[in-house]
Image (cartoon, rainbow over all chains, first blue to last red; front, side, top):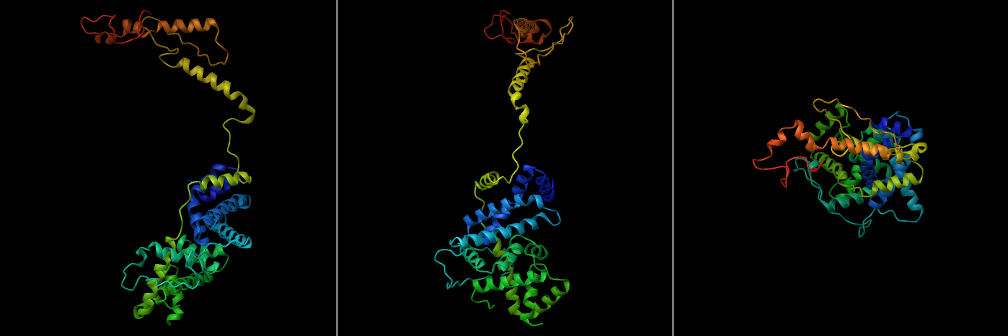
Length: 192
Length: 183
């Protein structure tokens, strides 16, 4: 099986099939990333279309100096950012908050307590997931992207640093702060 | 190291990004700090929570993306089976190939079979696209008659006779083999 990098080089040489294979492999991850960044399914779909358009257009300048996925997420993050900015400039509200929920809402969320043996396996109910999505949308973009790329998409701190163009230490700090903000937002019992 | 100073390292430890030395420091601190143990569990939970966020891909997403890529000229066109210069010849070539295949198919078309005491003659298959002449058609019809299955059964296929039950005749309404009477 060809690697992503080989497929991208084939696409650069004019192979449509190579791009179709890349799309098949990564479109779900791209849509999920855009969904988490925008907090809205329809916005995510539009942003994801933009991401693939940019990937296709950037093919002539693609150099396999880094992992394809790292490059892809770099494009994805920029495209998502631009999409959000364009939407705001057009005067449309970016639907990060759900209907009926405002800035001053109180969410007495019960996070897993110290007696839970494995918090990773805790089942997050739909209501909590919705609140989590809202809280995620309230993070500063740089913190949100770092946290989503690491926890959501499985990129290492080093890879996240490459995508965001910052140092590994900055990624470490951003992810820590994102965690504390999310905990503060989700549970009033946790002190920041 | 105080709680405030080690929290960032706890976060990195939860993500598996702490160095061995940092991880040892965290373990040592957590062993003696109930509050940070709670925080460490909450950090893990909030990390798992992000994976619960994310919608599914819409059914027509692929079509929409490729339609947009094509409309904006960002995608190479799908390759054609026939190059443009040869496309005009595709239909007659396909028709000739199909006709040749029909003629060579056993049963209804030309076929070759050795008969005891005779010399096998290999027929040239009409692979050219030239139309058949009347003479050609008569030749084909003659060959077909010579290879009537009933004739073959009578000459070199005694197994077919076994299918005739005592008292049965060739005029039976359900002849065992062949199928073309009066050939």
